[in-house]
Image (tube, rainbow, N blue to C red; front, side, top):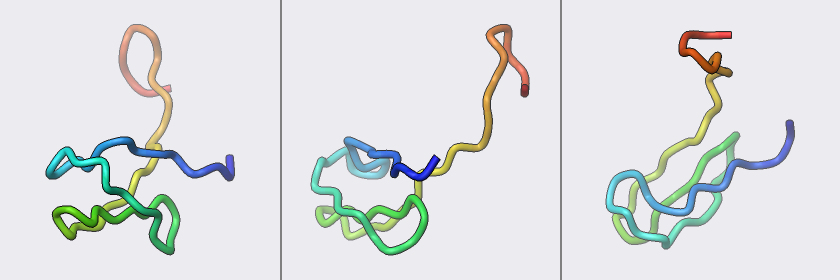
Length: 51
């Protein structure tokens, strides 16, 4: 999967002032001046637990 996961809110301040950064899944919030990444860690089974 090559598409970038798009966050709609900053996980720190909740603002929507987000811009992509260089790097896999990297984003920056220009409201609180924090940078973070979004990464899928795996799939879960419907009953819970790792796939």
